[in-house]
Length: 206
Image 1 (cartoon, rainbow, N blue to C red):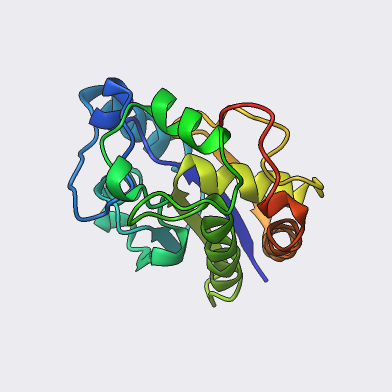
Image 2 (cartoon, rainbow, N blue to C red; image 1 turned 135 degrees about the vertical axis):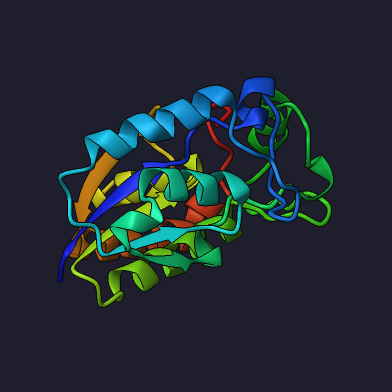
């Protein structure tokens, strides 16, 4: 088993506007600052021999991956929809604070109209992390979303509630995990989602 780095995509236009985007068909690009963030990360990771780069169906992860790892580096690019951002349904384009407030006021298995519950997203993300752990390449980079990284990092650390601790996941900051840690994180996410965690009210918006 090789190693893995997890990266939150660079800043997007919706990040700047403070809006949520859970529909991959809505092509929200990186901001100008996001493009610069990705180029800076390319320099930071230039010494690594990255054999595969996993991204989601969202344009912001695809653009980040292509800027960080241009074709000249020749990694294999893999699209993994299981690591997509949480589906917002009718809340697409809402202000982030309003989306957080809606979810914080309801159990974690509550689903917005035509959207996805936090518990459903967690189970899906766990499957996605296992899929990454099974990739044959020696060294893998994953460009995904804040929720994915928060759950993976908290799960790998053994948190009983994979939404806690609440941690900032900055754009384009890399986090190193090995494949065994990804599997541990997936197991912890599944345990949390199958427990009262899926039905309990969060203690703050997140």
